Length: 444
Image 1: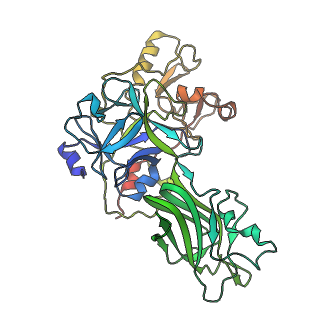
Image 2 (image 1 turned 135 degrees about the vertical axis):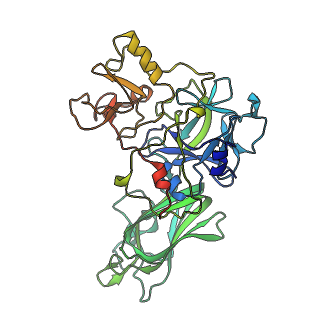
């Protein structure tokens, strides 16, 4: 397995994350599991998991090496795989030679025809999809005396995707008795679980099964001092066909209705990757920027850190991680695509600025996103002023005091009218940049 000391010694080059430009509520990063499977998942959760699955190295030979598995990213047809690294990566046919292009695409080989992209299972849901929704569910105890019609609180209500419904156990006996809520799911790699409780427990286990026979406890809670009614559990990409909550003790404050105690679940969400890395034609383009990738330097990493919760988003500092020019190659590069004829406010009225903007769109050192989760253009012109990324001056609607940017033209062109009307046809206010290295720091 490569280490960050290897990076310092130049064996693999600088450690990095590879962040997708994909539209959505959260940023998505390329990751690799310990058994060598490439995936794409929520960047924050990948960093918080603390296992290095989000860390990569780009070697001088163009091999893209996973920290956690030591394997190399490879393309085979339209599929993305993790394979054993080889010294023959200079061979075009090896499927191992990668380069970061000036137009923010990650190119496979020298031909300039194949690039890394993403496909999604469900359009518009973000980095994860709910594998448990509408799947078969059962419970070892169900409400009988709690409601006139027990079906109103059956186990299926925990996975129906309706916030106002919930599953409830029967009244718990004195001293409690463990109750299990089980859901079957299509075989998937699991990255997190979210539980919204109607009657939260004080103690519970989360268990997974890969074969339907043997269950393994992957997460345990023994106390609930804040009487929380929401639980978010980070997982490690385990493969499973079922998940269950084993509730062992009720919460004395939130786990009762009058004098009687219950267990109850509003929502049992099992989160699986919504995106799949694929190889696509570099000229194909994508209205959601699934084909744009941005490297961010990893300056420190403690593999023994146990992360349970990330810092409050309000404490995030401006991102100081920028692309190392040595990562980028100008070989086989297509023309930049920012300026288009007649793009109104984007297009400058004189050739010199067009040429300057074209240069600014190449090798962008930092990417930005709007509050709606859309990729910002690399550069723009407003009121005859040229800027890169986000602009701190007056916005197109005349307001001041907030950074804004033009949306990447390819993305803006694909937006439906209701989305465009939120702020403007092709611009939006900028989201705060996440400093992933701050998230990665070990607590003192």
